[in-house]
Length: 628
Ligand code: PRX
Picture 1: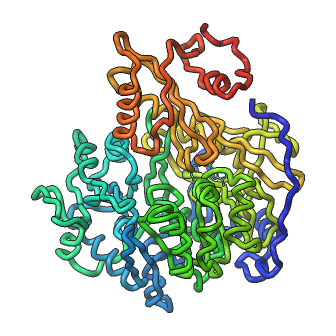
Picture 2: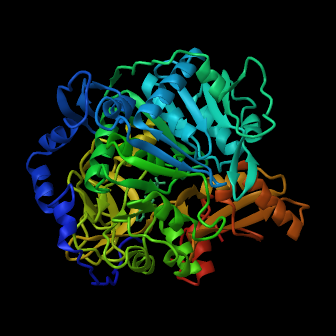
Picture 3: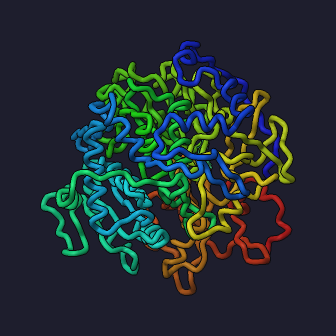
């Protein structure tokens, strides 16, 4: 039931013309026309701003559903992120500022970051890691996490970064799914002044993970955690035991760069594979033209490298641009809800790229916190991960942007690797709308029959042409990959519902599949359900997303208990704890309801939409296939 009439607001903010004049992209409309006239020439021009060890011979080859980009080009993304700048005028520029949870700060110039990456890359080599091997990175948001990613890229190892908030089962699935040879972790992460051990979670995840030969541990705690000889290595001892120079591996454009797991609509997460050349060009392009990064900026993306936003817009894209990036291990409201605004004042942050869930949290705390700090260094605000609802847009625009800064609400996905839809800097902004496809991207909104819907009518969002940073494969699941590209006229189905207004501005309405976006994180209903049924008291479970003012959505779980099990508050607690341990805190249901039966189709599929409709007091729709 994707097509329905949506009432759209016409409210528009016109930014001051000087933003457009000073932006890298001065005329998005013109750039878009340029792309339409000569798509390959468009991408070729961008690719020439980066360094290739050997030039590519052809921009792309598209044999539906498989694409190759920058064919036979040889390059290395870590070289483009580091060596290119270290050899030139950015050598002594700060590449990375870091602020710890306890207020400690560290910084690395491009020169210093390159040295660290080279040594760690040699360390990985000394553990037998070679081009094409997979390395799992399970670390908090510390500079060493960035160093580990770039070191993998340098030697051609495929990294699989796992968000440090995931529990042991989720980590196990990601380690074994990717066949990681080495796992890099830390003894602990620090949050809100508390030490949260990470290594024990990894130890549990490593049971029966037969591909792992070594783990590398960043030890920050005193006394130091002990390490198992021959198997567990200290991060810095490993670096100190090897040579200092590590030439970048000659990578083919289509050599894999990383695997990143994202929630699936089955119980198993999907390992999205991105390759080197196209991803490099796509993230560079969007950092330049959407986020408008300049040499004078201090750029802060508040995500974690454990998500695609962190890969594309903390690490690779900004460093390709030679930016100064800021990262923090801290949480947004510790020691108080003014801490983020204090970073902006302290570091002179000029571009802030964050998530609607954080914006809504700050709205709740009120203006007194941002008002305490001087935010004049800011010149661009960005949002990603879920719809930036008009109320959140207004607050961000007025309270943080002082009613004058451009706000770019960027729509994209793990699968797309780069921004796809936004309002380019200097264009009129419409609260609630992400904007238009960026130059280089062709999208449409279609009905069930695959026909484009008129403005004001919702439908499925599709992408009509390949783009350089598109995922190349789902790890060990070609069939799943193929289904992405099975939209009308062989298009890519984004699994999002969207609506367009008369000006072509697109509003994203939410997912059309069984993924729930909680605080900007994708959670698969099936993953939570299988975590629940893995508890001995549960026979069956169904999980639905319910709108939530703060988090966008929250998880409501219905469970059917096994014979002899009795509903008690303690049992519900246990179930929540069980999900927390197996999947991680982000996947915890906000409520557990014990029920006697679940609505199912005659073929036994749980009808989640019925549960959701009943919960929200909405029409459950067609019930003809329901069993009882
Ligand atoms: O539903 C859309 C939502 O996040 C999904 C992609 O999630 P993930 O692969 O985890 O990547 C998140 C970071 C890019 C999309 O299918 N989404 C992402 N950005 C927006 C959004 N929904 C609305 N507006 C956005 N700006």
